[in-house]
Amino acid sequence: MPIQYIDVFDAIRVIRKAGGVLVLAHPGQFNNCEAVTGWVAAGLDSKELK
Image 1: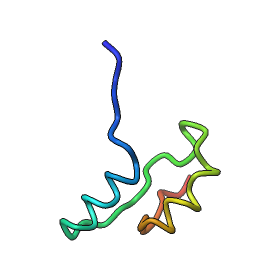
Image 2: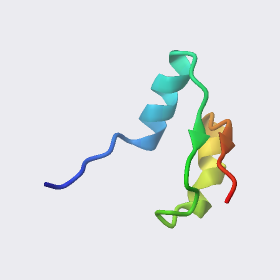
Image 3: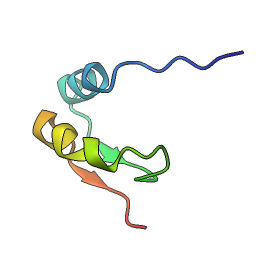
Image 4: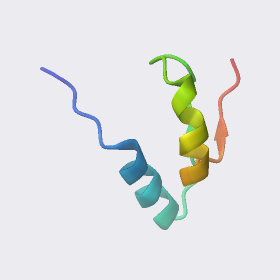
């Protein structure tokens, strides 16, 4: 069965609204390193170290 993910910006918005802390686990696993700058601007707090 295909996996469907919530839009990352929607997830950031909901987690921030709930008072959560956003940490990106496994950076680069999905070849998404270039997107991290945009996620930080949207509210990403930190990322897991490799």
